[in-house]
Length: 407
Ligand code: NAD
Image 1 (spheres, rainbow, N blue to C red):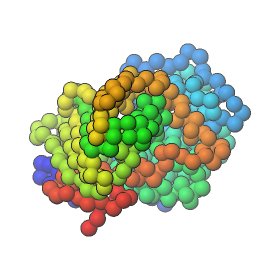
Image 2: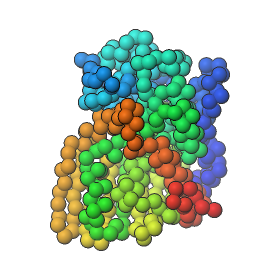
Image 3: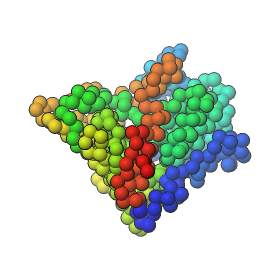
Image 4: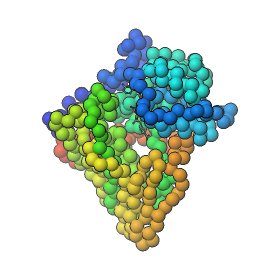
């Protein structure tokens, strides 16, 4: 049981593992084109408090990669789009939105030419727009698979926000679409470009806390009153099971890159209160316990209904690495406790956004290897599925080294 009478099968059928529309849909009428397993693109108003630039950012190099930004929501407008100004080899070439007012206001502020402002209905036309090399998908998660596939159909490279999709089957189809189109696919796991997390990976490889025995991660915040019709993060079709895919995925990632191991077994539990519209379709908490081949164990907790925190702790045979906050946009803190206590300040966390863009640009232009490819997103969705399966069935799930469930 996943919770409240929901079995794993009914959860998946209800949209927890939303099926992706196939490429064949590209020939369908516009209305059908915009739908994918119950998830539909829908223009939204400009989020409150967005500060648009007063001077449009300039392209810096002739070989800069031109991005079409798909989905002008909070993360795109508040975090990523302003960071293109700090990138060396990436610029905003086009924007895609379902809200004409946003297209005008954001397009004017970022100096996007009027003929490079696309609606979702016009999206396929980007195929013949040579100003666009790559598409950055910043839509609600339940729309990633569909729009990544469309971007590949237009023969563009794709940077896709985390989580990659809502099921491993969707991830596999996205990877296959990229391979068919011979285009790059990268998942926007920004912590792989953030100085504290990079330093933490190095420290753990160097056994700065000895041999790793215990890992604890927690990503939580308390969501205000809302419901699936008001907030996509509470809609199963758009957000899957909720906090694990959205926020807990940072803890999942940390547990993997800090240990350098894949779990061999997972047990888990979920909770969904009755009568709370926030949790009509998603979970309030998801907790899982992992065992690694080395014998290390990890406890991962994530919640949308408890006071905010975001930490990763690794305890080894000689000390402990404490990251708190661990994977924020800024303000990271990290210390090593044990034989030689030390506070680390390896650099400004806010470089992670532009570095991520430049890394992808290097992959597009120089064929450089991608640190966070689609295969990593697929691996993580397999683990998320294993967590839900373990919780649903009340058993320990055994895993193959690639994260697929055994038996
Ligand atoms: P948001 O609600 O602020 O914006 C989503 C945008 O998608 C909307 O503004 C709208 O432009 C578009 N959209 C199209 N169809 C929609 C629909 N049916 N319902 C709602 N919006 C629709 O969300 P966000 O916080 O910007 O998240 C977008 C993506 O970015 C998600 O995949 C999320 O996981 C990811 N994200 C990543 C980080 C990170 O740190 N890497 C942080 C926040 C969000």
